[in-house]
Amino acid sequence: MNNLGLESKQVRVVSYDTSWPSIYAGEITRLAPALAAKGVILILEHTGSTAVPGLAAKPIIDILAGLRREVDRVAAVKALKAAAFQHRGEQEIPGRDFFRRGEPRQFHLHLTIVGSAFWNDHRTFRNWLRAHRDAMQEYASLKQTLAAKYPTDRESYIHGKSAFVAQVLQTARSLREC
Image 1: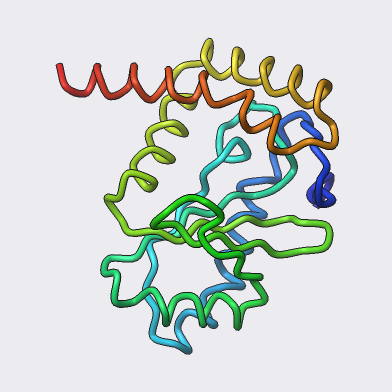
Image 2: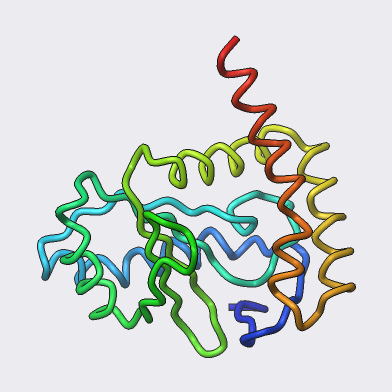
């Protein structure tokens, strides 16, 4: 793990690391026994900026974890806790349970229902950046500017990206409806 990990309350954007996909895969392999022990089946995907080849990112691997049924949420939370993920609750995003792992933080996991708005938006945004290099480069530049401006203010960093994210999602949805 070259430069993986970020201290709490810090914002740092680094160049893309070609090891990120294999780090994601290793974490999924590590997580599998804890899920199996609780009989939990999740659809797992690498999302966030580390899932977009060439994109500068905060050095934290994001995992999108999809439940097929809401009734399975309690068992999934227990399994993820057993796998050393810290449960942080919804954190102001209804329908999404947030987890993190590592000191410093190396993994974020977002538990939600497959097909929910949260699920669809994360996949759509990732896929758009993968398919549109110009948008990926614009997003990288924005993130680097915001990280330099807000090195210890994660909320302002996140807020500063929101208009760009909303525009990409709106464009992707409008093209899908055509």
